[in-house]
Length: 223
Image (tube, rainbow, N blue to C red; front, side, top):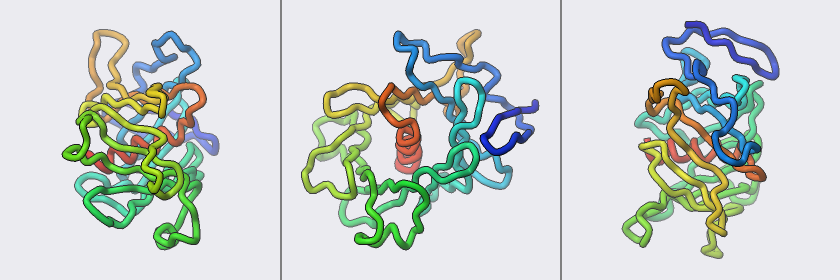
């Protein structure tokens, strides 16, 4: 089967066994038609790499991640790019200081050495894995803090659900759902695509690039 996709820079053609866009989602099937519905494919479009390819409702390539090594290995950094290959966000794992793992999110592409220097580049978000043994809510997967610190103890967003089942919600401080990960099913017959292809639904006002960065972080934590 031949899969065609559009990119801002050029068009490419690849051959794959299963095409996750055979049954495209024209729009999110919710009351709010302005939501952004993205199809996330846990596969790099470069044959020798692992990664992610993220498609819009029209089949265009929106985001991509190449050279991802998340299966049993945790790289120091993951770079989220747009469809043309331009770096958007860099996700860097913070050196472990205690029991709880955390990651820093930077704008653009950041060198791994620089990301470990506190005074050089400031992260825009810090994500901390939930340590459920210390939390009353066992449904919480991660907490998201603005900037690089957690000194005020007040998170901006919380991620709840189960990434293993591709069923997660990102909630803001008012408990409003701003993004959601869902299983993707074929539009005819209710056939599931499995865990490698799923939906990322982003509400208006929430950045879809950052929502995809949270998907990458969850994959880092729970793969």
